[in-house]
Amino acid sequence: MRTQWCSWKNVCLNKEEGGLGIRNIHETVKGLHAKLAWKILERKSLWSNILSQKYKIQEVNTPAHNASILWKLLLPHFHNLQSESIWLIGKGEIDFWKDNWAGEPIDTDFHTPMQFKLAYSRPNEVKALINPDTLEKLKSISLSANEDDVLIYTMSNTGNFSIKSYIERDRVQRNHLEWTDVVWNNNLPPKISAFLWKVLKGAVPVDSQLMSRRIMGPYKCNCCEKAQLESTDHLLVHSDKAKDIWFHFGTIVGKPHFANNFHTLLQTRIQGNNIKSQGQITILHIFAATVWEIWKSRCKARFEDIPMNNISIIKKVERNVQCLNYLAKPKGESTKWERNFLNRLRIPLKRVEERRGKWVHWIKPSLGKLKINVDGAYLNNEGTVGGIIKNADGIPALAFWRKVRTLDPLSTEIAAITTAMDICDKNGYDNVEIESDSEQAIRIIQGKIKVPVLNYIARRYRDRGIPIYHVLREQNMVADLIAKSARTKEDNDNCSYMQLPLNVKHQIFQERIGLGVYRRRR
Image 1 (tube, rainbow, N blue to C red):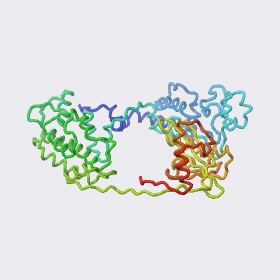
Image 2: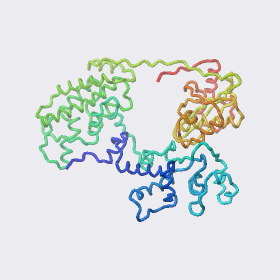
Image 3: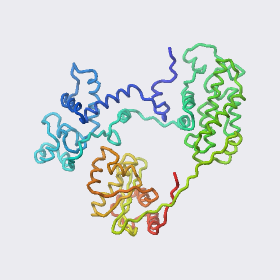
């Protein structure tokens, strides 16, 4: 019988949580069934319309006794998806009573089918049959003859259904494990990364692991003169051979050469989030190559009867480190002590690509136009937006800021642009242009990136015809400062220049006289 070294449950965790990122087959099948159910609910094709009408999906709670196995598997997903979705109105061809367009279906039992556009054109007839809140939602909707009705999946940030979003909604999130940043670092070959993961998970066939699984055999530590029980910590940390090798490299790089266990050894030698310079990358290579070569030498001693030799292992580690360094791409400068041990290891110092920056300036609008610079700030699950309107001379007309309920930085940037549109409508500004430093938010609002849940914003943008342009963050500094300062202030849609914080006034003055901001190359 094949030995199971690690539970499938742990293997299927995300890499950041200590797994291999492999999706569970049962969850995958569940997601595929949900995807098929979603296709039927969307009613975008002839076959999905036929199935939806034939089987009355909105009304069925239990499958018939002679239903197919596939239909029985799909039915629970219909119920889940209907409760987690809402219709975005376009042409208005959905069922007014049974389809969920108002937050929940109005009535699925009594009323005969009626298209939404028909009910929309006869508000007085349906007024007595719906509650006031639903009536207000009906009045706030506008039909679009060129756009189809779209089913929005509310458990996804974009509104699009995906197998991943459906599976993730039920998955319990675990903490990010720091050692995963080391194991899965891009500077390590996948083969060595996988072996380090096996070591940390206790999935390496050392004697102690074999004994725990009742696999009998001659047990003997090949790296010590005295008889010792071979375990992962003993082989890689406490054995005579391992101590000598760690002492050798620890002396060179100035790192501790003794630890209580393998986890501690990894933590004391490497910081996973700080591997940028060539020196730090080399320390990572030494650690991984040492573990790898000790294990290979142990296996040769066990199965080929070739004794373990410290000098041979050290030379192989140094050779591997030199090869890995040839492919390394450092992103930061090495310190003086890092350059010293690189020299001792005969590793040529790599030159970090010089990142030159440039001076950027805020560009004034043309004569007779107003320019609105907007930005969003998202911190600790709280979003704030801010902006400023300036004329062709760079003189502020007004500034504004608000707190907004958003889920992520991108939705906050979108809220900043829509807030600017509201300010334009409120104050009657026509000859305006908007600038934002979020290119993705601009593309979504312009409809170049399709996000169904934001279709109404794109539609409004096309109706208003306000030009929106992308600028660099350094050209949007005033809006950035206003958005960040809004966290501690009350909402204000009509702020004068005198009410602005001092740092914002300084930035406005610099932009007026043409002083730029230095932008570092990223």
